[in-house]
Length: 137
Image (cartoon, rainbow, N blue to C red; front, side):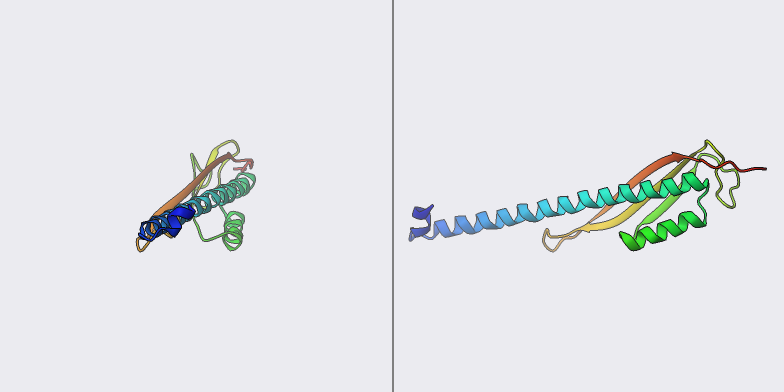
């Protein structure tokens, strides 16, 4: 290494500069992958908490929306899609005891640090649960 740096030809300097640029590019890519892994963990946590609220209350009502809003303040802005196999009351999105409910949480982000090009990426997490609430007729 010392012989390359003390060489008067200049080739050693160019090799080291290219090596440093390659090392920094790999470092930036590693940090981007790490940030998306933590984003996925946060998405899984948000969807898990939302399905717990929905399954306990048996609907996608005010409690569900309040929890989604508080999670948006705590984590980040995300889109929520809530659905069920069948509704007891479709107007109020009530789900009868034992029916399946699903929550899909989506975040749109970009891959940064790869130069002037930004790559849009969509991360999604889906959780399902069973309604724990019995609705009387």
